[in-house]
Length: 61
Image 1: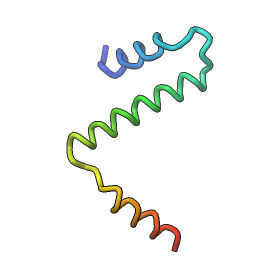
Image 2 (image 1 turned 60 degrees about the horizontal axis):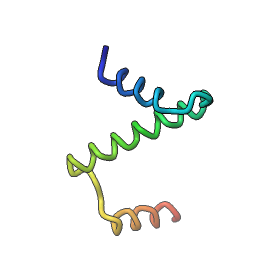
Image 3 (image 1 turned 90 degrees about the horizontal axis):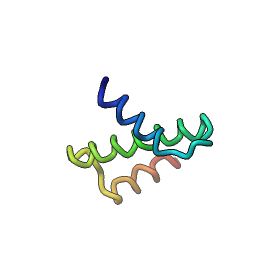
Image 4 (image 1 turned 60 degrees about the vertical axis):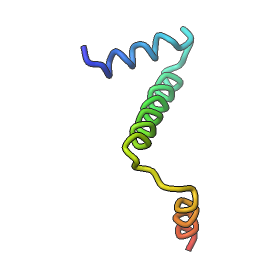
């Protein structure tokens, strides 16, 4: 079995028994987003808050 499947099984098993389908999906997606963000940080694929502020301001034009 793959590491991804094992990780998802552990995540699902840690949730309350009465979790809805939507709650389970939300948790799986959130965990994946956190993993992606940590990976980006480790690989220095981040930008400063100032750069992000400039990008957001450019979207308003």
